[in-house]
Image 1 (cartoon, rainbow, N blue to C red):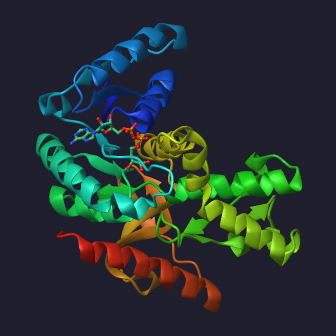
Image 2 (image 1 turned 120 degrees about the horizontal axis):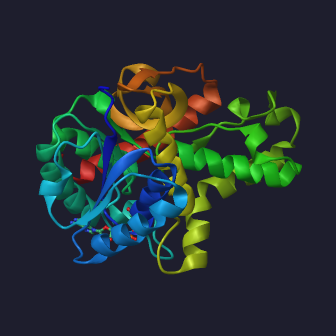
Image 3 (image 1 turned 90 degrees about the vertical axis):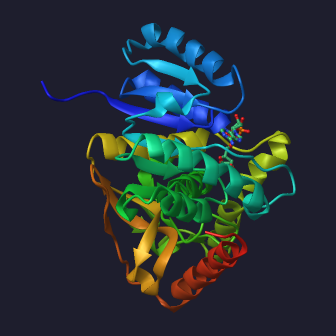
Amino acid sequence: MTAMRKKVSILGAGNVGASIAQLIARDGIADIVLYDIAEGLPQGKALDLAEACPLWNSSVSVKGTNSYDDIAHSDILVVTAGFPRKPGMSRDDLLQANADVVRHVVGEASKKSRHAFIIVVTNPMDVMAQLAWKISGFDHQKVLGMGGVLDSTRFRTFVSLELGVSAVDVEALVMGGHGDQMVPMPRFTTVKGVPITKMLSPAKITSIIERTRTGGAEIVSLLKAGSAYYAPAAATYQMIRAIVFDERRILPCAAYLTGQYGVRHIYVGVPVVLGKDGIEQVIELELNEQEKKDFDKSLSAVTALLEKIAI
Ligand code: APR
């Protein structure tokens, strides 16, 4: 009888944060704290979710708060606080404003939960993950960023639309930074084991790669007020589950590299094994010349942003 329910605190009760809370509450996998700077917002959303729990046969608690005290002893901190994109903005345009938010929120929350994992969603995500790691002082295996799972599910969706098969049967990999230079990897993208390079023309693949890279912007330009949240929340939830249930899933996440892919001391998207200890292994794929070039270009974009803020 030692197993206790996990506690997940979500910092930022906006669209992405509340959608993550909904998935956790529906499946009843952890108690939830929704924190936000806006008064009433997290309390209102938490109460609404708590009232849905009986209908989901879910017994978890959902609490909304404006106080960091409620975050104490969390197992996982999910960082979604900050500003979303508006039409015409790139994720990078959010840098200064969101760095201030993440610095503050992670500083406060990590003081209250010294043994938590941190999953960073706020954009520009790779740089915010690096900042969260630095500010918290936590082991780098326990601090990671959500980007690759989202970019890969977009890639899967577009491949499935093109081939007319279920996206469930499409495996895809997107590496590099979670920005316009991200690196969708056709060689590692398969339909029931068959690489898409054998099923689609190079021109088709190029256009799917382009749509994947601009997948977030496509939604921003449709929504006009705000950015995507259903798929970002589902992607974050998959990472939370992998940690809570020690699934050892192989997922692309922003991870702190210590020499893998020739990169040192920088957070960027790579496939990792994700389980109860967080990032248990970084998987080093053998990249060809072009893939290496694209990865390095994406890395340079992340490094350029890193240089613009004091970490
Ligand atoms: N402390 C706590 N919460 C904050 C702070 C702060 N200093 N600053 C802003 N917030 C809260 C806002 O009050 C808001 O409720 O963060 C929330 C952000 O929610 P949304 O505006 O709905 O944005 P969302 O779509 O959820 O995106 C959040 O995730 O995908 C990324 O690019 C996206 O960086 C953005 C983040």
